[in-house]
Image (tube, helix red, strand yellow):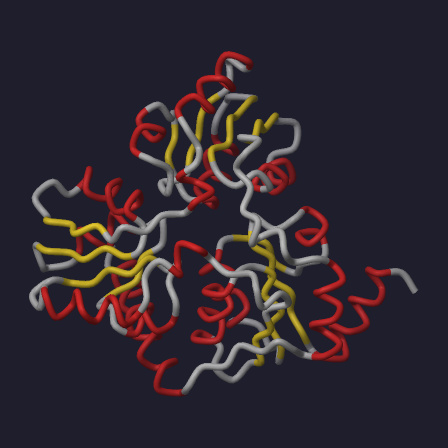
Length: 302
């Protein structure tokens, strides 16, 4: 029995679904039932009749899956696959800031722990952050944890006071203007698309700024044949499958080591042992679910 057959056998035995984030290694993306962004994957898993969710990603993603699927068993194959940006904002720190600014709304990027979400008024994704902040009645916003995404949102809402948490994604923050310009010289016909977790200087020279799913929509609709991809390197693998025939040029240094922890072996072990499991108290699940539901309500309000 080969590896793929073993995974299929275990999935059937466990009634499991495998989720893989766009930044996972190609071989992990290939064995997943769904590949996508973090919240979208959690929503897809919640709509299935699976008893077990194997989340190939990082810690906050598996927690979000548990919040949206409280009766399912959620497994994070690599317990040390942590998101450094999420770790830059803890619930204890946020509680202190909340006391200091009692009139402010707390908008939490989904790249946060369940405990941070539980203290927030509403969640947002990189694709809807601008809209969510615009819909909040408060003029003062505490935006956690990504300073770059928060600064990007500020561009669209100059009349709001957005208090930026000093967090950032090391992978995106390390993409430089020099990196992009070097690739542009090598590929002068290529369109530059970057993630809003990048710095303002990088965003300023991009042709397109969006979430990973937004990038897929952009390349499908664009007449361009070459794209410089300003996000985690293995997003180019997903893009090449979604838009075959087009060329995708990664920023070579844009690698998230935590996303690369998951392997085929760790997925098999997770299916065999149903561990390590993500556990959250019912109270935490309920508190973290409310800001996610508020975000979804805002989306429906178009």
